[in-house]
Amino acid sequence: MNILPVDPENKHNLGQNMITLKEGEEWRRVRNLLTPAFTTGKLRMLIPEFNHCSKDLAKIIEKYAEDQKDIPLKDLMNKFTMSVIARTAFAADVNAFDDEEAPILQNSKELFDIFRSKGSVSLFFLRKEIKILKNVDGD
Image 1 (cartoon, rainbow, N blue to C red):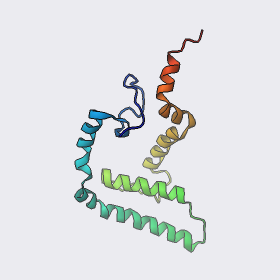
Image 2: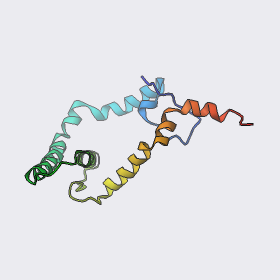
Image 3: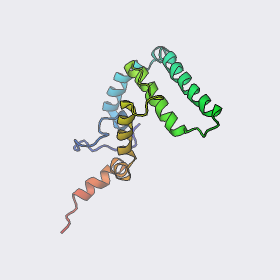
Image 4: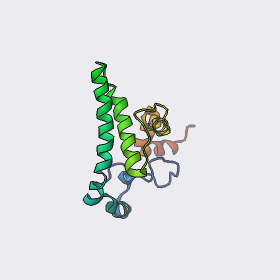
């Protein structure tokens, strides 16, 4: 079920093709295409990759504990998430915990900064209202 309406005429909407924004038959079609990729067996095959990234994260946290430093959880969890995505989706070790300038970290930060801005959030969720305002004559 989709609770966010989509304006099919808006070809510039970043979220236009997200499955969470699909409705009816289009949602069923996309869901049926994606479902085979997320079977229990296929997800189970990813456990070693999750474990690898989890061990890397544990080592970093242990280092902070030994040094009695505050743990930058947000930063570490961002790196962990990007490491898991890179290993499971692209079979790539991106060295996110050791390399602050890792391209995947920089690119994901730029992408998520776009979605964090207040303007983009309001544009994303207020599509119908914006369409109504476009039709209002300012004179």
